Length: 349
Image (cartoon, rainbow, N blue to C red; front, side, top):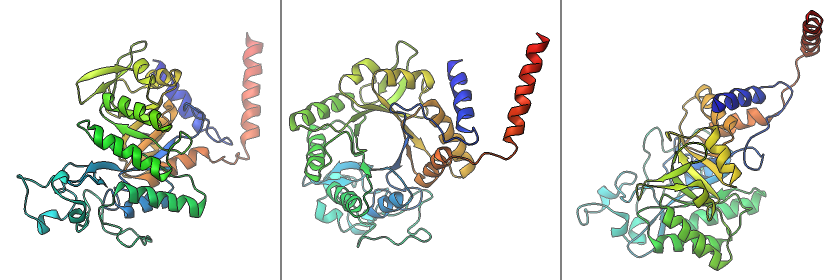
């Protein structure tokens, strides 16, 4: 009931003529748009080309998933295997029965080309990549340097949101923190986060950061579960539930799947009451009409950030809500009419 009321009220407020939207986010600001694996609906995922296009589309943050190579380098890659997204099978024989990132050196991986998957292609209308090898597998440091270079040149404040892929590995998590530290992504004011599905791993990242004097918010990923007074996040890596109160002790936010059974206004309000942001994944609307429904629904509930393969659509919906709408010329007559109705009702009473 509360969710329905908040949603109806929120959507009504977002559509009031003459007013930009006010948001129920933790800080009251407009929600952030996170480019999920870059602009991955349009160009090969986890490439500098996809990250660059996402930034040009207005995304606030780019998300590199991170894997470790055989020689300990950090590369932007979602899968543990190179097979789905690269041409590795045309250049190398399988190793130990597959093409795991951990079986190949950085030098070998650098010879590969990332190929489009799903609806993505190798080009986007009107977009010319600004890097020499836009569809090579980038290292995490290359992603961080690319974002830093863009920010320095434009004055933008694009953030990064690396994920330490599970199973939880201390070496991977610590190397991610070290790379962010070296690249200057060290504070809570840089639109940046570190995420992992392992809640124990999230705690470890927070403690390791504290030892370095860093304060990048950590996001614990999973599914929103529970009910008012007993909300939590399901940890897929251990099949256990971490209460919001526990996560608030070390995390800055929670990243929850849109299929969560308890992702509603009550859950978001409970997280906000504990100082936790709520980020939702993954938004994949394929039209502006679908985007207005999907993003608009969760913006009205107070979601703080959205992961999306379509950053242009997320930005467009948010911009529609934040841009003041000119008042229609007939509005004074409408208001006068409403006032007359109110007087009439009072006189009848």
